[in-house]
Image 1 (tube, rainbow, N blue to C red):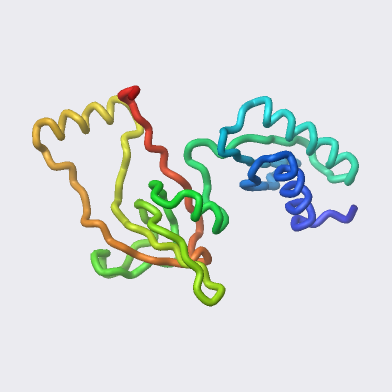
Image 2: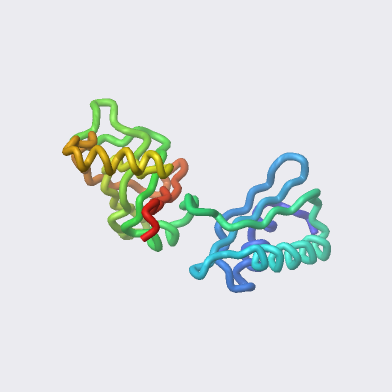
Length: 190
């Protein structure tokens, strides 16, 4: 097979989805590493990764695809958002977005913002152009138990945690350089 990145992407995507998983990403990295990321609404376990890895190994042998190593994994709690269906699936979730160009909106500094933290409000398509409605809140969830405890203590003492006024913005998926979910971890165990 004369291998192109599009052919490889199509082969891997069809294989992963044919096995009942959602294909997330394919990366071709230096030193012959191919990294495949997959997801499933029920979660992805080590056995799932092993099964898909074995199937892809057979596929690459049959198709004569040159590689040194293969990694198959889940996207983790900070899953990247690559396709329109990812944005639709995670409406209401907290997301970090980096745009190619600064976005201008009332409530932003004069130069605009290129990096946004907030929640996906919805996705709609008009005339073939998909637009993402986004509420910029600049939320920064606690990343460690100690940080979560400090925030709870500050709230009990009545200290206002600095927050910006939410700003509703819209952008197209073509304007997005990269985006990923932001893990909202519960350190209370409830």
